[in-house]
Length: 278
Ligand SMILES: Nc1ncnc2c1ncn2[C@@H]1O[C@H](COP(=O)(O)OP(=O)(O)O)[C@@H](O)[C@H]1O
Ligand SMILES: [Mg+2]
Image 1 (tube, helix red, strand yellow):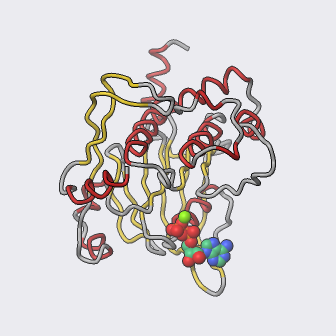
Image 2: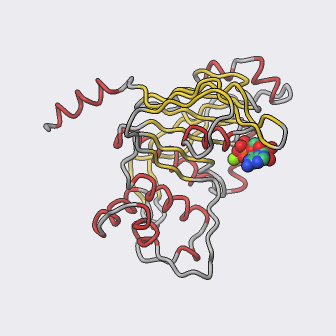
């Protein structure tokens, strides 16, 4: 297929519906963990799920992934859909020696050259032979991301990939996610517990609190009364833009003309908070 044909295909597929959760709910321990969840994922879209801890984000992702079967409503997925999943928690037995390459090979038939390229693409090319037990939180997140994209998924689900990542790493990851969408021509379901920042390339935000409180473009959610009530009347929402200048990768290289994080709008306070932790 020529490059032009590929691009035409991508445009044609852009609105292809991949997954629909309709009025879905999960009932456990005598209560609804989530209820009335409507979620549609179309190819090429980035949907960000936000909500406090315990608001049902992971549960919703697992319903979409088919890991949990809904007790109410239903899940429709395009036949032969491939899902890539970076879970929020991965319990690793640190006494078990397993290298980065081995971990990726466990879930995907892939050769060493491809592993090398994938790891390089997610910024951890130097960790091909590293032991999983010794990786930092941010490094492990990227390795798990490489493992998820190795399957060339139609939908990539990232459950709180920003956990344990500092300000600089956060902006790099946002850029990486945006690039992955273009490269894989997939849909991305991104979960964040940060109610205040949503990456600029998010097409839709869904704000969850056991049910969907509000949803829409980042601008619509930011202006929503329900959302602002959820924040306790202290609206402080930013859409996370990048301004390109230069970029560092995890291997210590500096690249010109790339990303420097620049949260915009009413974001001064949050910026200072984040920077002081970096
Ligand atoms: N398998 C389960 N059985 C019973 N309760 C659960 C189960 N999984 C999660 N919960 C509860 O459901 C709620 C939502 O959890 P979760 O989806 O993990 O929230 P979030 O990802 O937004 O932090 C929490 O109160 C959690 O304790
Ligand atoms: Mg969770």
